[in-house]
Image (cartoon, rainbow, N blue to C red):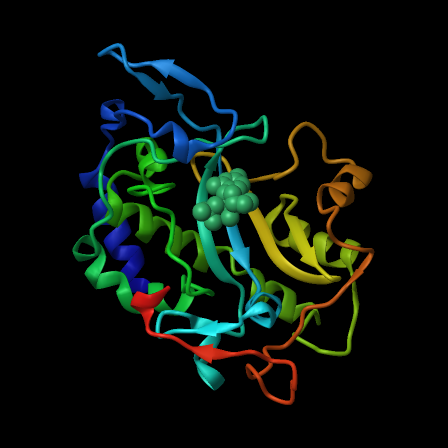
Length: 271
Ligand code: U2P
């Protein structure tokens, strides 16, 4: 962590950004109402995003749906499977609820982030065997006006994730993984509000937390994920896939004791 921070500090000096060079969009990838501007060469270009959304996923819920295992799927790591909120993505978003995607033609290059692979595998693992987005670098390229190049996008994301440690904040308040407890949604939201001075957004599946989003201004100060209002009813309705009492399931070993489980191991290249 200290190493990451030191790297971030030196990298921040080196990369004061060049985002104006954002290139062409892949309209089919953006796939949603987006702000399109005309670039200097007369080609459509997505307008710059408004804020960051750090999307976290809860493996205890997500992994319940696992039917296929492969080496890249962290749900299949047995007792080493993650038991904390892991990173789904640092998403550049618009205030109107839409988002840009795949802003340049730059290709993802794993070599550029080779020094980050250990923490990334642990804290930003894939929780499925499916192929990631087919476009080049879906969120990183659109974040570039703020986060810079690929290395800095991933480093920045890790640093923000460690700084705003939702799992720790919830555990310290007694919201611990459990397959029997149900917790008040309002209580979980207010613990995070008190810790980060901003309102998160949650998404649930069958009453269990599946995603938790924390939002940031472009200077990475926390802000509400709910646009326009922070009244109590808006806060809860913005997490409207969640009932008033929600669970944070503990990770259950895949296939264990589940007669209906169709879990199968498949080579990565088959998927
Ligand atoms: O919600 C389904 C998928 O849409 C993409 N998404 C959603 C909200 C948002 O603000 N930004 C965004 O990109 C995510 O796609 P992914 O990154 O997983 O490819 C999300 O999973």
